[in-house]
Image 1 (cartoon, rainbow, N blue to C red):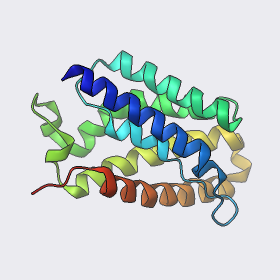
Image 2 (image 1 turned 45 degrees about the vertical axis):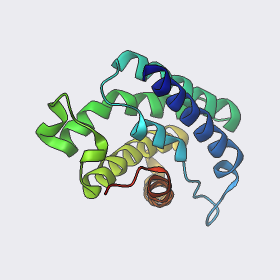
Image 3 (image 1 turned 135 degrees about the horizontal axis):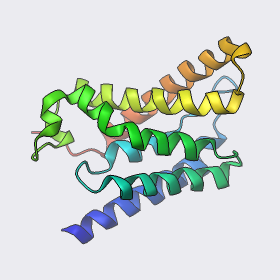
Image 4 (image 1 turned 180 degrees about the horizontal axis):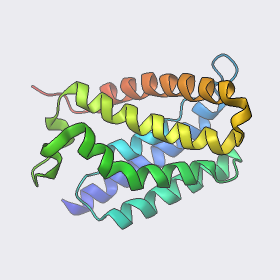
Length: 169
C-alpha cells in the first residue's frame, strides 16, 4: 500500500512537470496567460504524511519547473510557501473535518474542493507574480496577471481534476 502511494505520487510529480514544461509553458492565451498545472500536485498530495517531506518535495517540484522554465527561483519560492500554508488553507476551507484522522479529500463537497484549489492557485500566483514583477508601481499589471492566470489555471485544473479523479457513486 505504501509503495503504491510512493509510485502514484512520483508518477504525478513526473507527469505534472512534463505537462507544465512541454505543454503549458508554451501556451500564451492572450499573450500572457500560462496555466500552471503543476500546482495540482499540492492539491493531490496525501494529507497525513509528514509535513517536512511534503515541503521538501514541493521545493524540488518548484526547482524542477524553474530549471526548465528559466525563471530565477520564483516557482520554488511560491510552491514551497504554498506547501507551508497548505494545512492552514485546508483548516479554513474544510473546517473541523480536517482535524479528523479519517479525513479524505474525496469525501468533501465539490464546492469545498474547488475552494481549496482556488486558494492554492491564488496564493501561488500572488507570490509568483509579486516576485516576477517586484514592483508595486505596476499594480494593475500585477493584478491583471494574478487574476487572469489564476482563472486560466483554475479552469484547466478543474478540467484535469474532473478527468483524473475517481468518480463518486
